[in-house]
Image (cartoon, rainbow, N blue to C red; front, top):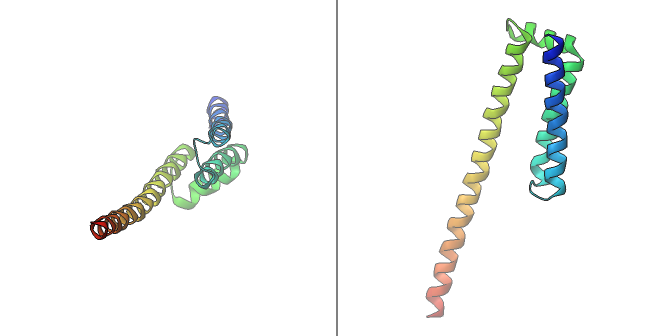
Length: 111
């Protein structure tokens, strides 16, 4: 990884930290979700500063270059985020359905 790529990745990792902290501070992002994103920023910084770990992971998964490893981990991360939000959406949909049914029963009983 070139020095320019390392600097860019460090800026992205540090920027992610700052943006997440600011979003939590302004109450635009729940603390529940901020942990995952802060962990991601920390992971980026660790892998860039501890480049031997990134190379070891690259050999472990059989990738050709460390940038491919980062891309694969990013892709897996996005898949996991999508799965998590799908589970949340399913739960919320079920709760809304239950609330609508209870409201309809309540309104019918009031008449």
